[in-house]
Structures are given as C-alpha cells and as structure tokens.
Length: 65
Length: 250
Image (tube, chains in turn yellow, purple):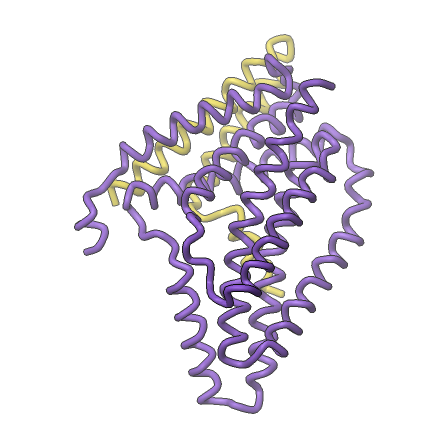
C-alpha cells in the first residue's frame, strides 16, 4: 500500500522544486482571482506565464547540473 | 456548443497518445514476465490489475458527479499541471540530451534479468512474483490512464471521448504486442511524451483558470492557443538546455 501511494505521488511530483513552483503559481493566481475578481484575466495571465516561467527555470537548472 | 465540440478531437487525441505511452510501458513488463515465466502468470497478473482498475472506476466514478463543477475543474486542473509539466520537463530534458532517452528494449532486458535472478533464488514463489509484477505494472500504468481520461474528460462532460481515445490506444498496443511478441521499442516515446505534456499542460492551465472563474478569450479554443505557447516555450527550453551528445554519453 505504501509502495502504491509512493508510486501515485510520483505521478505528479518528479522535480520537487517544479511541483512547488507550480503550487506557488496556483496560490498567487487564486489570491489575485479573489482580490480582483473584476479582472479575472489577471489570474489567468499569472497562471499561464507563471507556469511557463516555472518550466523554463526548472529546465535551465537541470541543464546546468 | 461549437467550441465544446471543437474540443472533442484534442481531448480524444491527447487521451489516445498519453494512453499509448502508458500501454507500451505496461506491455514491456508483461512481455518480460511472459518470456521468463510464461503467459499464465503474466496474463493472470495483468487481468487482476485490470479487474482492480475496473473496480476503482466503478466505485469512484459516480462520485465525480457529486463534486461541484468549479471545484472539480480546479482540482483536476492543478493535478494536470503537475502531471503534464512533469512529463513535459522530462521530454524537454531528453530532447536536449540532458537525460538519456527511455529505452523499452533496456527496460525489457532489465526486467527479464531481474526475474531470472529471482527464479535462481526462489523457484517455488516465482509464479507469484511474476503475477505480482504484471499486476503492479498494469495497475500503476492503468491508474495513469484513468487519471488522464478523468482529467481530460470530466471538466466538460467529455468522458466518453477521452475514454474512447484511451481504449483505442490500449487495444492497439495489446493487439500489436500479441502479434509481434516484442517490446515496442520503435514507438517514438519521447515525441509522444512531448506532445502529450504540451496538451496536458495546456488543459491544466485552462481548467485551473476555469475553476478560478477566469473567462478565457475564445472560450474552449483558448486551449489550442495555450498548446501553441507551451510548444514555442518548450522548443526554446530544448535549445536552452541542449547538451553536446558526447557529454550525455559520458
């Protein structure tokens, strides 16, 4: 069972830093969506460009290692 | 309605391609077990894995209908982002030569050698070990397929389209596996993972945004624009991380 749960977690988390960055982007987008609901696209833009930035940083870090 | 219909093919294609990758990986292990121990334990383990998967779908599937749509879209969107961007990152690093490509032939050889070693140590329990190996492979790869189908289909009531794509991929791989009896090493797995990673990430951004109440310009068609942006950025990321071949091999 523990093995199964570990494998299941592994489906979503490989590079821990990337997973944390994605969660951080989602949290910021959620806060922005709640604070300024009249501009919902702001949260959308944070989500899209934040995820792209997280991906680029993660790849660049792995490339340097 | 029109834009929702426009999503049927992307949903079906993404489910088909993602399930193709998972089915090829499961097939490699089932074939390795069948080679060492025969089809009986390999088949029994695989069938037991499929049965548990079916049970999970039957028990948990109806619960989806009780989750508020916004919450469902948000949770699925975040999980898709984690899952899709993990695939995309790995595919980028493989394309750039930072990490080696996944090799089904090598997986097959490793799995076969491991089972032979276990046979040498403990012949009596080997049928159990063989069945357990295929059970685990089918269950874990199958869970990924189930997740992908739910993630792609549940947000817009397209579970049938996503399931059709997944079932077609699994049947195609099973059929080809039965005919050739060899791991499908020629399937361009990294290209598939690259494409699927882009599509799942695009769907992830879209569903998470929908869950947050974002009214995307172009409605569902925004997913196609997101996929194009992810493709462009991923291409740039490959160039950014590219490593000379000799360095990878060393």
